[in-house]
Length: 442
Image (cartoon, rainbow, N blue to C red; front, side):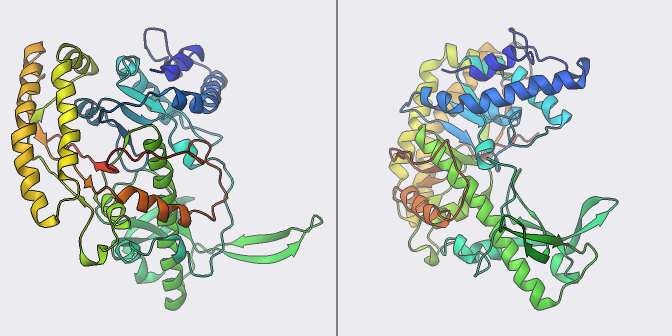
């Protein structure tokens, strides 16, 4: 298992060989920049090599969406009892020329906290989001149909029904998102969001800009001046067209990122994980030919039962080392349960899923909980908490190929290059995606 990210951190002087993060406050700014740049460039150049080295397995593995899944310590620890291997986004790698001091510091803390999990091969950290934003260039896009053709027709109405647009105002050089519905005053800046969504990254702020004073330069290229009136107000018809286009553009960007990451997950035998109910629904709809009848290809198995609170990576390592057979059996049981539920009619899915969960999974959860108690040395270990979704979205067999086919045509006009996933064979040996959301409740 590749530990290249840790080796590069140590080599660049951002971490000690024992896994202790270097305090950035103690270094001159130019030295911090130098070390971060070295790590950033080395990671980008070595990522494909790391992906080639990932060994395929028949176990249940996960790739956390860089945009719709949190990388909190709790979610990583909880997921380490469900998935054999987890991949998350590298917080220190960026396509931008700058990285904030806060982001760099929190990223190093994550590496320090997860040092043993990475060394053990349970957690892998790869620059996933970098390949969704390969350049700093802002493309100039033109669409005759307000980007409607960029959205699969199966999900078009669902997306617009769930879109929420808020007004944005500029004050002292900052953009302020207002509680006001964007249609109220029809301002020239708006934010696009969606109901029941989790979205940590991606474009969601849009400005109504026009091009003026266009002319050809000496090289024969058109040069135009972009004009935006921050205090402007649009006519209703003009605003309606622009608002519709903005929703399509926001989803176009979202779909491109999802497509990229699903291809990557399939390539290395991992399951794409999203915490967004909205995202899980439209992914399911895009893979279902008769979705207009309300039949979704993904159904959600929600285990609202008590589980275990894990307090540190060391507890995970002890559990998986001392009780490896129990963990492997649990992991394989989830895969078997998925296979047994795949393709069931919606009318019987929920009842059979619940019966199988109670019969096959709950006894193993009790066993894992007992094991956690057995190795606990502090009162906080092994405490019961609420698991609001250990397993989710059991996808039908034809969902992934169809969805990827739709996405391939939708993204055919994009000019960006995706070095990680371009022209690679996709794996079709397992269900397409699992919606996984673990929430600790006290």
